[in-house]
Length: 415
Ligand SMILES: Cc1ncc(COP(=O)(O)O)c(C=O)c1O
Image (cartoon, rainbow, N blue to C red; front, side, top):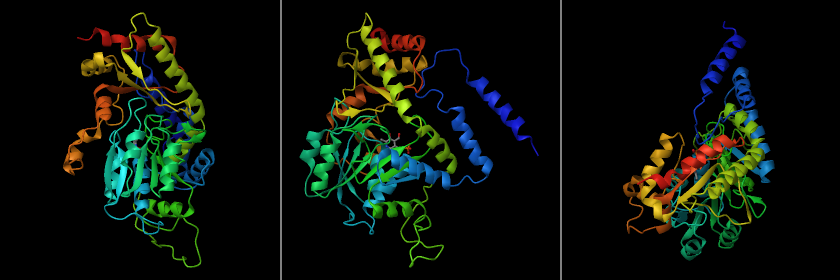
């Protein structure tokens, strides 16, 4: 029998020494987990019941209360949350459920698993371009594209911001069109005083590593309709009714009432995620301050000449960032590849905005989803000139800020 305390101390000492680095590093997310987060996870392991249980239920309750929605259901990733939302729309238990080949709208600048679950559920995409101000769906293009054939819309809220989702949701409701809000990049952002993800039929969230909060992996799906909740609840676990209230007709213990997947989370992820969730508003404030510090300091530089643009958001948005989206000025756009290579070499991690123009992905060709080769100009422009860096959950020190800003201004020096 090993001495658990001694062993844990040895592991903690080893890893805390390893994580101390004197050289400058600006990763997507810095020091993701507090000691308390880790202890919450370890507690679950020590109880020796790590599968989905009471802690997941508690997190779901806290999440729903915070978001001001009736129901929240935890899953093992944001992609799985999208999967359940998509399959709920085509589920025979849903009122006016969608049929094979029905059309949905989605932006061309999207994430892989914003798109594929709906196609896997048998629906057909119609792509809409985004706008260059905040990289979200172009409302003009969106309203123009709504036809009698439109049965659903998947709106992806990009990196903490959004289009006028209030108006979009009202228009869709009037036309009886289902709305899923992929809020995997925007947990905690509010539009017109209401949290993103709570305007539609379903809102989905991700707790993957570099997001607003993290559980390593994990996700949540929210809704306000009891029937919808019952559908996603059984889809999450084999089509089982095990996590639903028993009715008189339903007394069997292995009662499979629907089709299903297994996308259950672990209670370990729920414990870590729930502990991080308590700090969401603190993270939101610090990240916003860090974002302002970076932009202000760039603009104060003597060599500043608008080399970089920053996302412009509506005054109705109270944003929750996890990254700082940046668009390179057109005069410098040819330098993007070399610029990002240089930032990377200098230990500044960068990522594309979502996955760029999704029309360029091989998977689109594989399934021939853009047969007319329609161009999505703004999505392409964002792919050509856009990228983002992380925003950390601790205040940026002046020293770190100076090095970061100096590096970001190196674009001038690239030939
Ligand atoms: C918009 C969007 N949707 C869905 C996902 C998938 O989330 P997950 O990585 O938790 O599966 C991501 C991932 O980053 C995302 O950015």
